[in-house]
Length: 55
View (cartoon, rainbow, N blue to C red):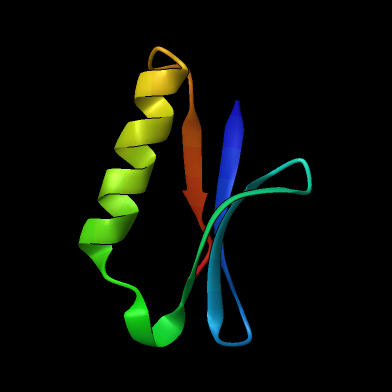
């Protein structure tokens, strides 16, 4: 499954096929939050996920 990590206006989203799996306001975003979210998704999908960061 392919996930996109994208920035729109002042929000950062993890999306796949127009479904938002996680979101943060830019002021509250940290790389650690992103890493934890991607690890959680990978764990749920048994490691079968690809992440594309677009910002």
